[in-house]
Length: 121
Image (cartoon, rainbow, N blue to C red; front, top):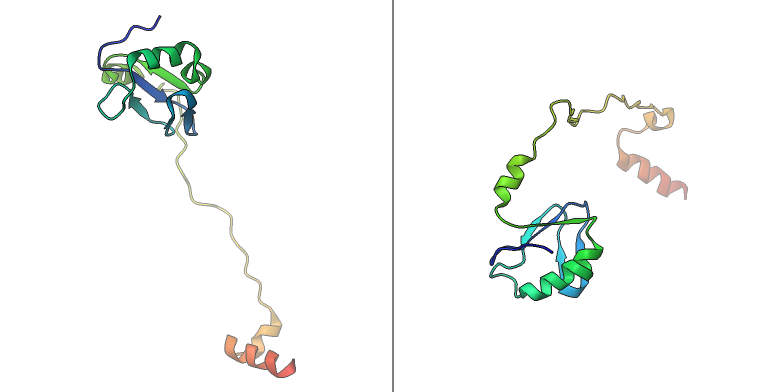
């Protein structure tokens, strides 16, 4: 059984995609956290518990986490491993080759090239 405080029922979406909870008619954006018992939502505790036991919260349990209490304590408990290497974006080392076409050397501008094509055709 899930133990809950009176005003907090946090759902954390840990996936890269939005998660839709069909029985609650709610979509939780990717990598976000929502308190479903806040004043912005109109869910009862019974609705949330039923969904957590056998509804969409239960079915999507691999994509979302349910949390109770202060999230600050939970987030502070997650530490980055010192051996983890974060990849920084780098500039491309590929050098693009530019080709010179002898056909285009005869023209001073694109307008002259277009005019000549129109005269031929």
